[in-house]
Image 1 (tube, rainbow, N blue to C red):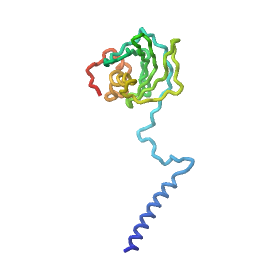
Image 2 (tube, one colour):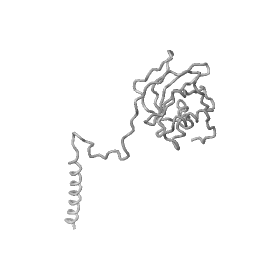
Image 3 (tube, rainbow, N blue to C red):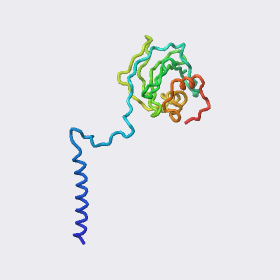
Image 4 (cartoon, rainbow, N blue to C red):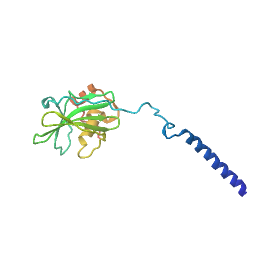
Length: 186
């Protein structure tokens, strides 16, 4: 009885070792990931090159109506700089104006389908953009400092990413011109 159990265990161990050997034979230090499966759905997403837009004319910017209680800033978007890239990124210039009249201007992009944003550049007092050295994609959340990006994603640029993961520039301009105040909140 013990010898039969020993033979079954030995057979299981040898089979496992044979399988591991077959997998190890495909691996090499030169190409350690060669045996890993490639992307099944096509190439991974890649961001296209981005050029800074011209500095916006504040008089031509369009105010966004967020209707948030306790909102400290007014928000404006520049329709001239609004674009949807081949990579699916919606890029725009946004201005935040404080009650005292000071303005913060940023050139940003939003990836609608994954709810990420990136700030490419900030406006300077010399009416030009200062590009960030290594801008990074960050998640859009509803936090105190980030809520306006969530509202942009949800109501203007991406329609919440649900029905329109890659909207056209024309659709976005229509949403800015005729905002829907009755959208359900998430």
